[in-house]
Image 1: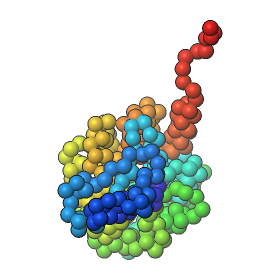
Image 2 (image 1 turned 90 degrees about the horizontal axis):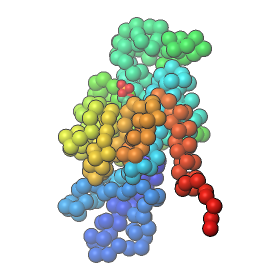
Image 3 (image 1 turned 180 degrees about the vertical axis):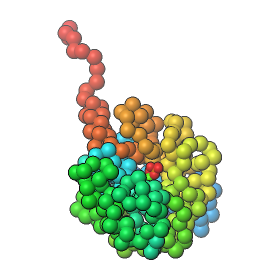
Length: 324
Ligand code: G3P
Ligand code: CA
């Protein structure tokens, strides 16, 4: 389910709700707008039942959430990071080529205020340089080799800037992007990234996420229509409640349970779980109805997912016996 389709449906459903309140009936147009685009589960914001009319007009877009057993979106963790150096254009391009719904990137601010793609706070692990990202200019960062540490065949790979990533997403394929804000972000820094996303025309193709509650709240404020996720380790009543308080659309934990996913969905929150690379985990998470699975092996998850769909289409039943 793309974010764009989700938002379209959300706007229609909000319109239908307001129409109903104002007129006492659901107009056919409003009803058609509110009709779900597929068999996924449709959850209105928890505010719906008790909200004032003003609240209803300003409702967050409604979520279209998976049912248990329904195929989850595939998110390539730092790109296809099993096959190419993490957080490089090569890793992102590989993720788009397997047809994953999203690739995930980690961003930080350079010394001279350019958002760049880097997981760690320093460049030491994944480049031939040393030092903190925040102490290096964009020119210094772009001069580093971000590929040789992974494999000599990737020698010369560069640290991408956020702009490079947005240009890729705006290209001819259909893979969207999950942008994780690492480290500390100022309001101005967050606003600058939102302007870049808007300028690229990608506000409907980005999920912004962070472990920082403060950054999630800043993102929500700076971009009321952007899909925003809060990263956690656990998924439980407490994290679900906090996610709602800080204005998140999704709560994205490392581990989940069927009950917790249902609770999050009932609260109108999506659930994107990180980071799982084994078939057994994919099976379990899909059975729970999580909305997305973050993986270092997007190609393998895509193949697993296709196989699972094919198996489910195949007629069930035991061995054919003689009919009398
Ligand atoms: O998408 C979530 C995941 O990327 C969070 O963990 O450390 O890999 O950024 P980390
Ligand atoms: Ca990340």
